Image 1 (cartoon, rainbow, N blue to C red):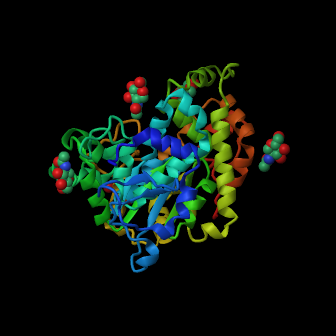
Image 2 (image 1 turned 60 degrees about the vertical axis):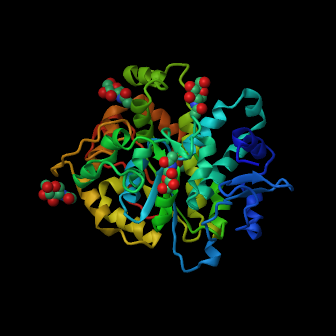
Image 3 (image 1 turned 90 degrees about the vertical axis):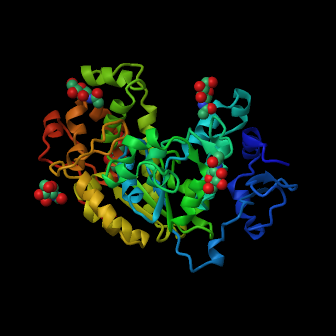
Length: 421
Ligand SMILES: *[C@@H]1O[C@H](CO)[C@@H](O)[C@H](O)[C@H]1NC(C)=O
Ligand SMILES: *[C@@H]1O[C@H](CO)[C@@H](O)[C@H](O)[C@H]1NC(C)=O
Ligand SMILES: *[C@@H]1O[C@H](CO)[C@@H](O)[C@H](O)[C@H]1NC(C)=O
Ligand SMILES: *[C@@H]1O[C@H](CO)[C@@H](O)[C@H](O)[C@H]1NC(C)=O
Ligand SMILES: *[C@@H]1O[C@H](CO)[C@@H](O)[C@H](O)[C@H]1NC(C)=O
């Protein structure tokens, strides 16, 4: 059997519940000899068991305790400052960083036929997310191919989501071009999409293996509890960096970045009167997910011991170097000079720099100012509503509520209570 089973089989398997939980019980089968063609990395065995990683360079952690490979997850929500925070990993020469690979899974699921979609619940989607994360953590990028559209040919694709957010995917040996730009310190985003052209996923896997650690950023896992199976997996040394941000700031940022989706909110913002058809469910869900995750994390269950760090984006923006050092201490890694240089060049508006990061996902040069500029950009009536919807989240994370517009706009009065979690 060639590896032509592809998406439909994947989806069906997921719907049958043959997901990550099932895989976990198969650890004893792992690593097994590949019974099919050597490059096959996923198939359903005769007991409806899911085997994977036949193309096996992967050694389970328990058998190679000498390896101190860290599997870092930047666990965040849309517009919570995760692009900026991800750079703290992306800039590290020993870390292979991938920016939101789960995008491809979600696209495949939402594009599948409505009949299939009906049998797929969100649990199945989560199972697919976790499967993919596990495979990526083993540097098996070919597993991702099942989800990339159009389908990669000969393990080569031009459709890797936000490839230029991964420094390793823009530098040799994955991309030979661009040496000059890298030397000049140009951000990958400005030249990588033009110069690097298609991505050879085999080379990308090799680049992943060549680095000591791997970090993945995702905004698509709802709650930290959804990561328990990965966290307990003895083959991984998972480190969850949970990034949170003031929900009012998240909302203001989403209104700007996704203007089409937020038309009603824009009207609300401009008039200070809530349109009847405005959809409050997204921000409510964001707050609830944040709250449940933080509660789980701070209860320090055994499965998260030494594996969970809560980071408020505002603390990072205000004090990037200290906070970054704290994150690296948590990871047990040396922060290194390249990350520190990047921080000093990108969090200091007055520092001279030849680079402009001027696009939707840009990580702003002046993190201190941007972390709080939502306070100038959000109508007070919206602020009041979000404060009501999310009141427990605010209390839990130490974000102060405002009672008046004057209090909202007065930037000398910080809305971030000092906290250590
Ligand atoms: C999803 O379907 C739309 C419309 O058919 C298409 O334009 C888009 O490229 C598809 N996306 C993926 C990831 O398959
Ligand atoms: C991708 O890279 C691998 C490893 O260097 C190489 O063997 C393969 O031929 C490349 N694929 C294409 C289509 O160039
Ligand atoms: C910011 O840049 C200016 C000018 O290069 C420099 O004097 C200052 O020390 C920098 N501040 C920080 C926090 O790096
Ligand atoms: C809200 O409205 C103000 C002006 O009333 C405007 O300056 C600001 O950019 C708007 N905010 C967003 C997020 O659209
Ligand atoms: C949040 O609001 C609810 C309903 O108004 C209230 O019962 C609860 O005490 C509030 N929680 C906090 C932490 O303020």
